Image 1 (tube, rainbow, N blue to C red):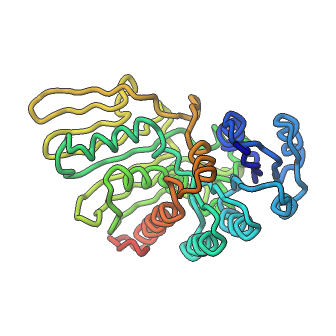
Image 2 (image 1 turned 45 degrees about the vertical axis):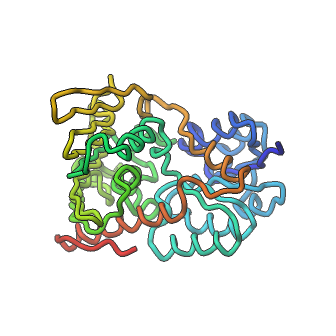
Image 3 (image 1 turned 120 degrees about the horizontal axis):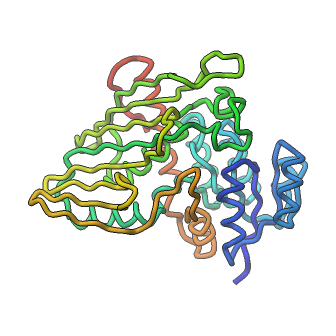
Length: 347
C-alpha cells in the first residue's frame, strides 16, 4: 500500500508525544515535513524524524507531495490553518478545540465538503479501548436506562506538560488559547459524554473561575483554571462535569453513569478500568486498558484512525461535526457563566 505523506504544523508536546511518534509507527504513513514558529525546534524535530523543516505554513501546504496535515499549533490558528490546508487539497486532522467560534468551525466543515477532503478532530479519548468497550456495554443495556452522569478531568495544569514548562505557556494566554480548562480538558469530556450517552447537549448552566494559576507578574491568568457545568441532554437526562487545572494530586479522568439497573464507573479506580455496580448487589469488572495521563502516555489511536480513514476512503470516527457540536457546547458554557443562567446550546 502506498504510504500517506504527512506534514505536521506545530511541534509542541502534543506532536512530540502523540502525532509524530504515532505517524512514525504507522506502516501506512510517512512524515514528509513539519513547521513550527520556533525554527530551532522545527530543525531539531526534522532531524529526529529525517524530514524537512519548512520556513512557513504556506511553504508546507504548497508542497504537492504532502497529502495530509496535522494541525497541532495553538488554538487561535486551528481554523485558519485547517481551512488553508483543505483548500490546498490536504486531508486535515485538527487538534481540539476545533476553533474559537462557531462561524469558523462551520467554515471548516463547509471547506472540507467543498474540497472533498477529510476533516477529523483530535478528540482522542473516544478511541481509547476502555471508552469504546464502555460504549458497547451501555448499548447492550447492561445498566438499563441512563438516569444521570458525572464526568471529571482534573490535573495540575498545562504548565507541567506543555513544551515550555512554565507559566509562560500559551495555554495561559487568552489571545492564543481563548479558552482555559474548559476548552482544553472540557473538550475531551464533552466529546466523551456525547459519545457514551449517544445524546447531544440541549442546555447548560456553567460556572468558570480562576483559583490559582498566575502569570509571571503574579496576576491571575485571564482564562479559567476550573469550570463546573450542569447539563440537560436532548432527552432530558441531567449530568455534571468538573474540569480543573488545579488538581495537585493524582490525575482524575473519571466518568460515572447511573442507570436504572446499576452504575458504570469508568476510570473511577485506577486498578479497574470499568466497574459495573448492579442494583442486585453484584459487581462486574472489565480490565481493558489504563487511561492516558500526562505522565503515562500510551498510543492514542487518533493517527491510526486518521490514516485508516484516508486509505480506506471513508469518514473518520470523529468528524468535523463532532468537533463543532462540542465547540457549540463550550461556547454555550461561557455564555451561561457570563449571564449566570441556563442557556440553550445553539448548534
